[in-house]
Image (cartoon, rainbow, N blue to C red; front, side, top):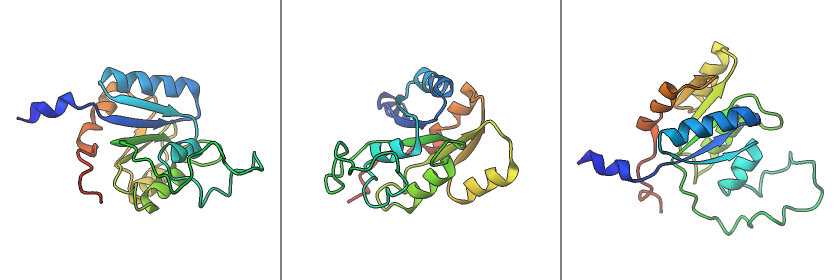
Length: 160
């Protein structure tokens, strides 16, 4: 009866500062019938996940408080089954994003996959030690995207 799972569309949040890479990963994920949300920075990813407010002090491009972002007490439950993020991004790297997600009580169970165009073993190991599920080298291939399926969060009912 495992086939019934296929009817549920898994939601993947893809984070990359490069427009071309975002389009590529979005197309690959959609080809594999995932529901995809793409953002261009770690801060936007945290904003989308509702993890903004308390530790948002490195955001120096605006002086007024983030009025357009939902207040942190209105924590919307975002159904994201997996996050795939670029490693090298200005501002917050994929490694920083991974650490913030793993430190968060509400998000720590979401699987995170890091991608990078540079094959640096120490960087790869550091990400995996911090809790990343996989480390893909760019350009990401369809065969890489197929490796995501076992890591997806299946159900959220365990959260209170």
